[in-house]
Image (cartoon, helix red, strand yellow):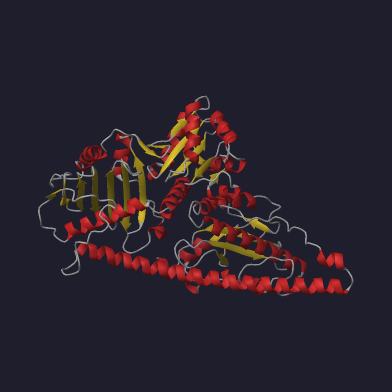
Length: 584
């Protein structure tokens, strides 16, 4: 099952995390049991909570080593989605993971990838129970159900936030937001609590007054500062000594955040983008080795329970000597001699389908990347050969100084780091003088792509596409009789003009999409009246920013470059793949 939620947090020294977890879980399960059995946490066992929900307790104690592990696995399938939540509590004095609680939630959506369904899972109820009942921390960061307020006059609070940003032990993202000028700190705290409610526990969050923002900005390098009145997500392992690392940590400018506001609220795309950013950060960061060893041990003990579903719950087994690697040398309970549990078979079948789809997607991406790499190598070899030939010609002409001179530094054209930066460039009339953007009312479609782990790739490809379209319009205006369509232009861009790999271009849609109203209407976008008197027209030509899997963003355009026309290319849409017959 794809992982849709994860949190890891610790509680303060002096607390018995197993006892705290037992009390909290008992309270939480009381609302799920209906007429089912009472779940006992002192022993391992399986339970049917109600018609749609089951629970499994795995308890492992080693009294000689003073080690205790408690795991609760719940599964529920109230509708088409099966939810699996796994909570693990660790009491192991002397280890980094002592007094740690780790919660994972996965979802089975019928073999499909949740990313393909605009799937944003809310934080599991058990996580909310813990965060409300206990003082939970991620290293130096405080985790809670609403953002922590930081005032500039509070030296300890400002120092604590700075420590949280710098903390190498931090496993989760930290979101820092300034307060808009027209709101109080308390009002903005409630607004941000609403924005982040679906990702509670997956990140720590802070709301800063203006004085606190200024103090934090003074303490951080310029590239890492939080925009005044804006927002920044600090991912784990911030490297303040490396200015390039700042590109890893997404930011929203005050202007963008202001545009996303609706009264005291914020449009949903902001929360969705933040959820994706923090969830991708969690997925990309492997669990610590000691937690992986613990996971293997408890998975084995869960499997042992699964193959004997009818037996009574058994007492937690006593320790059997030292367990330095958490029982990693144990022999798995099920060796294949008997039938595997039906539930495990179902899970594995679903996982096989998921992995096969992921393999197909990765192979397609690899093939496209290798093709672009080979093309880049050919262009590099041609440029190096031309450079060597020109220098030889200069030497033969007696221009030895010029032949040995270094070329001037190329003008800086750094691709945008994210879609917010891309949108800022798109609104700069000087950036693409031959393009006209009509997506002002649909900028949320662009921002829905924010926060994805591939955002930087997509933003770069969108920028490359816009640059190529702008240069194509420039070329057509300068050479009206050349007769080059965009496909011909991209196959061999003229010297001094930018291009993109021609395979990214789709000059039209399928007949089904172009002739069926429900698909064509989705591709009808605004244009100025001088382009079409209706103020809208269908745009079927588009540029693909990713392979044919998942979100696969698209950029739709209309070229109005014929003689006597406006001489511009109109950009009507930039966002996720629009519906087609195969996706409906």
